[in-house]
Length: 541
Image (cartoon, rainbow, N blue to C red; front, side, top):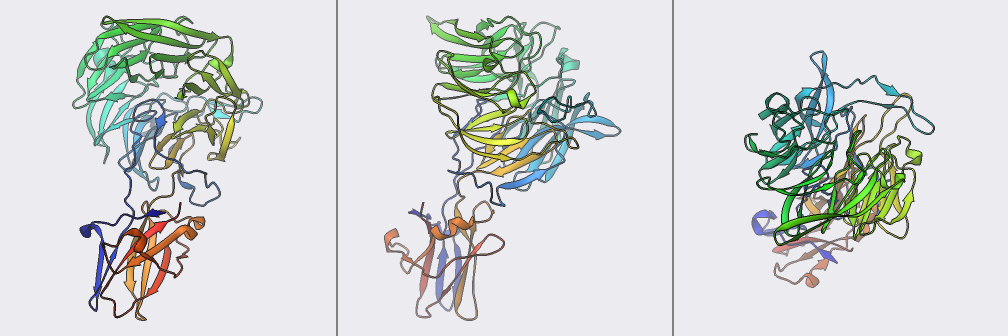
């Protein structure tokens, strides 16, 4: 039995009438984990937050909100402090601009939007698709994703390489650093796609400049000034990752010629791993994956996947090729960053735009052995939530998969975006997870779905009716409706002695009745001879 924790007196609901006192208490609400950066707090696409044992896809509350103003872009969501942030393109003053915007995480209503750059994308550039592929926009918005730290949100624009810091509450610009004008930073073909990666008080970016050939840089989050820059390494479309190897915290950049690792604090060079597939000339967007002392990376367009084995001895770093796998689309990913679970890599692969022939794969990290591949996902994105893979497919499905190296095991699937001839679009975005909710983007909209465990219950209100009936109203801590199948497991218990053990609280036999607005109501006759009574909620698992 799950019993609500008795609230401290100042936080309880207290009511007196005719000398009788009632105290209502509810289960403590666990703190929700934010998803403050691209691919989560650690940048590895992993959340330890729990997820519901089954997705209630038929429940009307499953889709919390849909925002159709978030068009044009491959930006992912980040979620923090009750807000969801993303980048998008929109017309303003007769021209297309790149914006950073914030939505109310509960309702999807736009709270603010701030222009951070010009936008070169042609929204009328439509690819009509091939066999089984719906039409989609070819170049339709920002590729990057914002990041949140404290009361500030940071964005790294795609066109002129603006690094912008905004107030997370109202979007006002705190500082802006035009990296193109100041440092000669330059974008790539298809524009910059890297997100600002934050660790402590530093933001890590690749300047891609030829001014002084020191491209790998860190900027102070407080004022946007340069903390350090080093190494003549050109940028790819990847976002840097921060991880500890052999106990040393380091930032790893996937550059044109290889993986470069620097001390996260001062930028001191640690090691470099040259790609066995040669330098990148077309595109590389999948961020590296770090697990123990192995660093896995992948690139498309005829390349493949490789794992670097990183060691340290006598204060010196050494890196060797653990394996290199090529010649198969099952090892090639354009921008779909992988996740790791119990020593196995799961990722979307392929460099085709046909979702019918683009698979989700499982690869043994230590050997590179392909364990299985399942077609039909497309160039979307995936994350690991608790012990579940959550995949956003290119055509707009959210899919829940059990990570199992023996075989593909699909647990749930739900279409959250609809595309067609009259509504072209696609999902080249990675989902986000925070407070039991999945956030997903497409080139046509943003959506939030509730896949978290049942939220804690609480008493919302009470009143004594004229017929001596006490009316208790029960709702959820997050404000959403109580699921109908949950009602039979909820009990209201009462006692006259506040210090009584949980087993001594008697069950109130009157039934809770679910109303049309999703709250449950119970009436209980008050005994006039009772001087006081305390109520608490309990729920069977």
